[in-house]
Length: 74
Image (spheres, rainbow, N blue to C red):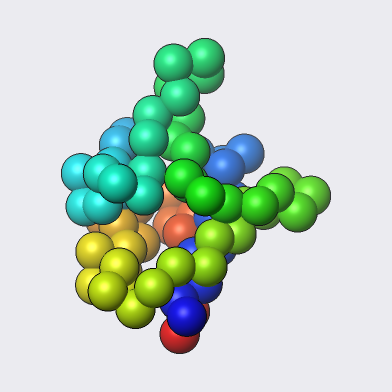
């Protein structure tokens, strides 16, 4: 499994993650920040465990994030 760790409270809403993996990331219409689809919130951190076939796209999302708030672990 691949683990995606996301600090939503630091999101600037640039949508770089949505462009890299639109099935895993969505823009919130409430506050303009991105949501990690399928994530569990633990304090201020959102964590999602996904299949390996999503690894490359989410690594791209992490690289593209100007705020540097996405981490992908294998």
